[in-house]
Length: 121
Image (tube, rainbow, N blue to C red; front, side):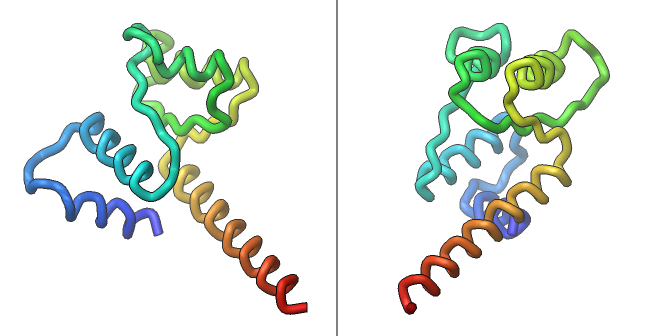
């Protein structure tokens, strides 16, 4: 499911190299087109809204942030730490994110199936 979606997004882009940040921006556009609210936020020290301000204000319930370095001065470290301190769920690996998405989609399917069964009876 995830690979298929990433493939769909990539197939619609001009063929060239993209930075992680550019591709994440494209993912955000894809989410909006498909009815999932998302906003672009700045880095920890950028102008608001930033990753840290939306966590502090409890505007989100899940953070997906994969660490690249075990360095306490990175934005990622600050994001994961604040998320834990604020009680916001954190997914910190690509495998975890894929598993979370698969479980979420499966749960949605189960709920739709249960609603269909209830409507029949």
